[in-house]
Amino acid sequence: MIDRKEIVDMGWNLDNSYSRLPKLFFASLKPTPVSSPKLIILNHSLARSLGLNTGELEKDDGVAVFAGNQIPEGAFPLAQAYAGHQFGHFTMLGDGRAILLGEQITPVGEMVDIQLKGSGRTPYSRRGDGRASLGPMLREYIISEAMHALGIPTTRSLAVVTTGESIIRETKESGAILTRIADSHLRVGTFQYVSNWGTSEELKALADYALQRHFPKEDYYDNKYLYLLKEVIKVQASLIAKWQLVGFVHGVMNTDNMTISGETIDYGPCAFMDTYDPATVFSSIDIQGRYAYGNQPQIGAWNLARFAESLLPLLNDNKERAVKLAQDAIADFTDLYNRNWLKGMRAKLGISNKEPQDEALIKGLLSMMNKYRADYTNTFRALTLDKCEDMTMFSTAEFTEWYELWKERLRRQDESKESFKLLMKNSNPGVIPRNHRVEEALEAAVKKGDYSVMEKLLHVLSSPYAYYPEQDDYSTLPMPSSKPYRTFCGT
Image 1 (cartoon, rainbow, N blue to C red):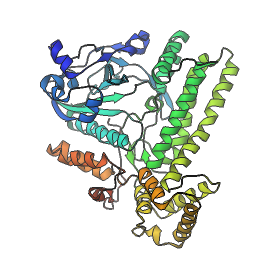
Image 2: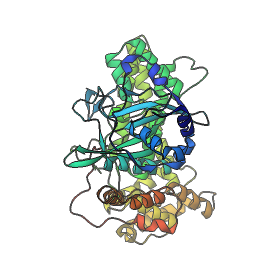
Image 3: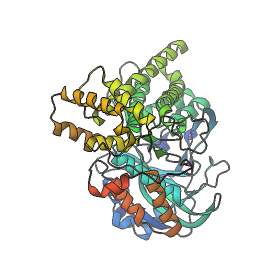
Image 4: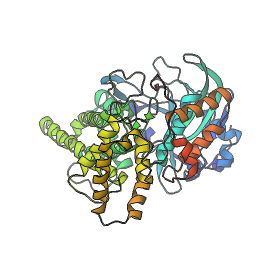
């Protein structure tokens, strides 16, 4: 057992506010121990920001906590219950292979969830084994940390350990556990679960908890649950706009994968778009393209409508009045999203003020990019660096005409060239986690035990807006392939 002194040295400072909610919301249980845990990667900067001692975490006792073999003092391990619409079909779900240890109180007083992913079976596992394999856990580590560096709200990755045990998927794979950090794991699906299987008092308790944790105010005035709905709509409109601005395709926007906090969560079939195409789909199971890149804003609105439905009993005692309040709130999503997206797209083009024709200018560029199969990230990178020569699109008369309209637009604002170029650099990543680079890193790590490729990739991705020479190799496109890139719901 870990003694008290060693635990204090690690820096754990855990609360268990979620465990004080009604018992319907969770199942109390410990992670399933593993045979031979080994630390693969530790996020040192994140650990320090959480008030954790990286030196102690790298020792055997620290690794034992990441593996679920030891429980830090103050933890109350539990698996959360939730439901969700998966590809439009409603079902009961829950943490089938994840255990929430508790909420770490950071040195600045913030509260974040500490969750072990791949830590064994729970009452919600259904037919799953409760485990995870090394490749998908490293993939989530890479992509979530890249998203954080891009300035996009996301869950974070603190550590990955291997378990010393094999798991069976299509083949035998190395078992692993990811330690995930989140503002919380409250989901739209959490509210759907309680709305369907709980009482009105239990739903109220959950809503009050969400308000206190994510949107605290001294006074909510008329209707605090309508305020909750509107705030979640705001943060999701902002989040999805940020996804679109960098070409990120989540891939599995089920309601159980939409957080109340506005963080990106669950990195199974996600990927970043190379060629600009609104119909881009990477997920091997998204046959109909429900979660295609261009559909993400509409799916976000659909998911939020399901959230609003779960809150109806709290919005007003009169059902018709409650429905009207919900509908009016959801109707604001499209405008909120468009405002966020337009602001971001203006910044990507160095535009710092507003003109009515800006949207047409932006959509004109995107239409050309789609027509000429231009790379999304590298198009904006080239515009930022004034290097418009390496793509077919740049040599067309259409682009020349658009380019002159854009330059004229820039001349109509007061900012200097240096100012708008800085705005563009801060808005257009010079590098993203290209799919072929991520696969290259995972193959080296999983098949060869070589983590240096992943470590270099993480280093480059940590400063996406820096525009330094080392990034150049990571901005190149993959070799042409007859097969489309496909991702899987492995995480």
